[in-house]
Length: 312
Image (tube, rainbow, N blue to C red; front, side, top):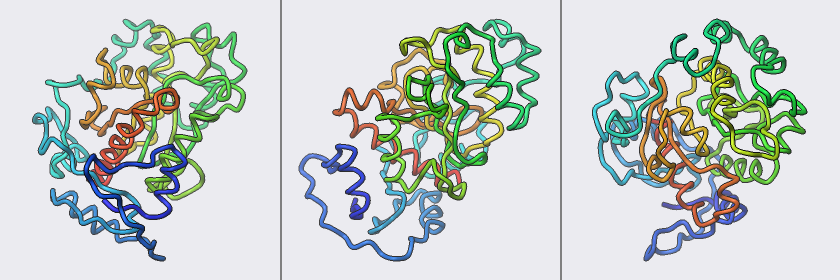
């Protein structure tokens, strides 16, 4: 794979200087063309299951999955799942992580959520949903928060990123993924020609957290807190209708996939959330503490990029 000068600079800022596998020759610098590549043609090649030829300046670098074909036949695949399978992407099914079902009122009640409240949230539009999050007192976190952290990005983005819980900086600014972890996430997104800033929906992502309030002293979210916030996240996903969900961090992954498996056993495959392809990776805050796993996270991003193109 050949990288553009811009991509190499971004990866160096992330602390990811060496991406080639052991024994691979270092890539020679390639001039960046003025015009953007024909991504439609590249997507067609991926959807047909063919590996696209590396191109200098390509906005979305590709990675051929190590496991050819789907891991299992999807039970009830939608169009994104069929496209991913046609591209030779490994898709998790019942033999892997269990995809999250559409929660019913009874399931919501079993998790401590008032079923009527869940039904009401499921019918809200964007302004109403934002107001409902800001006024929420369903758990004790409202007593210690400075403000809620709703989400940011394009309301119909093709990529949706789901993180864990707000930290101190997020609580101060009311925006997910800020501070050092947010800077790392932005660098990762820029390397794929994506951004949280104003841009068309094919380039601007939507970012949300599983929790909308900061737990005191950044402790781990409690099950009851996650359950009370889940209807908000479900409604955000339903409104965005993303072509790909990138779940970052243990609590986001476990909440969306309904599994207790660690990230290391879930990454490298394409899972599904209500028919939407979902890729698992590490949280940027974790990568700052464990830089050796940045290479694995980059592989996850390449898989996500290939999956998003195949679904599009």
